[in-house]
Length: 259
Image 1 (cartoon, rainbow, N blue to C red):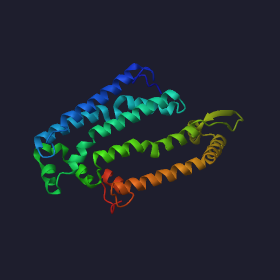
Image 2: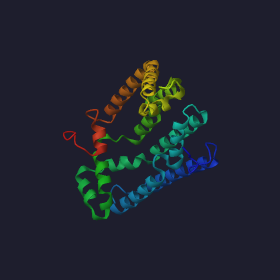
Image 3: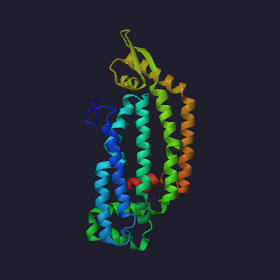
């Protein structure tokens, strides 16, 4: 991949400038609406929703720096620079979430008796579906203080485990032969590419090598899976979800019975 359309390199000073810009915009929204009456005034609410939409279009998930660093992970998961930058982006998104969570918390506290008034108001027509989704999640949205704790601990609880396993897999390099006896030196990612090779011998040898790598790290994978499962169960309990799939169904806007 040629990622120069984003930045010159991981050392590009513009990355830090853009991260600061994203955070500055998050703080601007926080300061502008912290004392706003958007949860009772339709005009103020529309102004907020327009601002939020603009922010999401430009800086969703940390904006351009986040996408660039995310893609770099796939190029070299062992890179110390990538890991450092990834931690920087993780912290950015935690800070953004902490700055803006009060918006969703206050919207979630709008009395249910007023939901239809907000959703059906003609001035908010283009945001009706967004508001409807926020109201659906209302009983699962935590207070700002609790959400901040969850955000701070979430990466250690699940994300770090995932990166550990990915790092172990990506560090593996194996040699596999094709039908002509030629030896191919491949890392974990390139092994999966060979699953689609027209050479059956190469396909089979790549599959065997792939399975050996998975088996080698299966104990770590088991620990990761069990940890993620326990974390998910605890978060569901804290956020008052009644069954494991509920948060997904709400996000996808589908009914359990339909699925």
